[in-house]
Length: 137
Image (cartoon, rainbow, N blue to C red; front, side):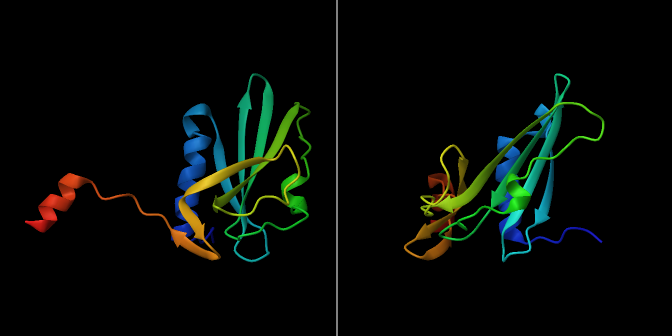
């Protein structure tokens, strides 16, 4: 058993790990939300005697669900009695409509995916000029 993901989730997981680096002590676990293609990245670390937990909703939809999933916004309790610092955020493709989100929610924009109108596209890295010259020869 294990978490089965596709290439889209692999790109997003890489982007999340660039923001919340394992070098800083963050461990990342991806969980499916059960609603469509969305997933939740659960990031945890211990920092200065506190346990920090950040949940990031990853959505490939143009408009986000009006009430955010309870699995994202519900804070956890620690079993060992240590204080918990909890927060949550949302990661969406570029040009997605985030107007329905409540104020104060962190919004991360995917660099790998964007919307052109209502169509989701994969944003590729631009070709370097040296590589284009080698191909043309």
